[in-house]
Image (cartoon, rainbow, N blue to C red; front, side, top):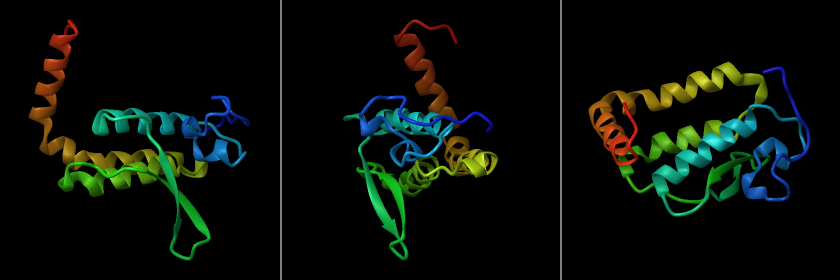
Length: 132
């Protein structure tokens, strides 16, 4: 992406800041990806906003952000871990690769559960009086 910004777009609330914003680096779509993670987190966990933990990886030099919560369904924990790891720790030099990888992570689950997802969406639309 070509548009980059510096500084905070969300005031002093670190829970709403993407990784680059917290580190004082330039950011662009990082904040959008962070927002997607926040919405997905609320839809899955349904308890509160997404709190993160900053976790040292491998040699202790590189740190990554992960949601500070476990996912309820064991069969999809690995999928959501991979999804959040990708988007919360996004590197702006790998935009296209990250988007493709996020899609690859979710695609098997979405394909396998298409009918249930469609039914849930239609039910939601009926409840809020949307036309599908």
